[in-house]
Image (tube, rainbow, N blue to C red; front, side, top):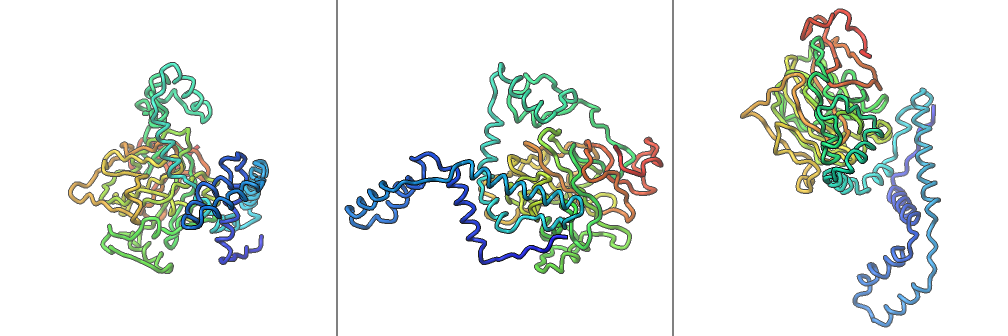
Length: 430
């Protein structure tokens, strides 16, 4: 087992400075946009605006006489490649049980450096590019490249002809043929989307599994409990996570909280659906970061789903509490929910507060299993947290590919339908 890493809080800012200085210098090869250009055109005019003009001119001449020697681009790329190789080796060792998964997590300074990247602006730009209408003569070649790269199955699409899609965004949000995703009638809860299972199981003492060995707080993920009889509840201590957990249960003696995380890759069907029959009473929007939710990043960044922008819908189903959360990601700043037209994600006007609440008390939204819920503009993640009787069995495994409508959980002796030989559905579906 690897020894725990020693952290030095007082050098965090120093590390950030070194990190970004190395990146800037590594990619500074063009003279007119180099460090000297920045000093002459931006720093000096503001720093010496009230000094003698002759002195300012002399100082500029001195700067021009200097010969700047930036680090070659190859050195910067080699540094980035080495860091990635190091993290990859740690993750593989954690998978084999040789290292604690927590030892593979990024340092706080690394996460802060990652957050400094202009991911929100990049996501906006990517959304704009996706919405550009393509000339008819280029659609099959451009869209075909995307289909081949990510393995999209166009035979399932309602419109198979790539020439009919005006832009890349329409291809992302394509609808499927009727019957392409049958709903398993014997399951208590079915998959809301096509994707890969990142984690599942019971919620223990208010802690959710991000990936195996890495957890995050249910309290931080959903925010203050304003939807149950025990709410509103604002907790500030870590010891209160278990207390928050209990407030979400309507029957703590017979029921437990369960969770499941489904990751949608870029080539998957990008619409998501309701996975049970339930009533939505409340929505909470967290305007957070837009970090990547790729499984490799989820194993590297602690509290990834807490940091990212997300939209949580909370309500009740036949067994009590039910929530469904759509998590944003890099290039997925746009989350659309069909019954909530007021929702606006990746919007500058909503970033000043921690979260925004909306109640559906005047008109509870009733959803049935398989009904359309919303869509992502690219791949992302769905997190389910729900109350169910103790003994509820999962029908999937971590890393398994699932399709919308496939069984995720079954409750013993309680089947929604009786048509799929329910007595034989005890293990994971393949």
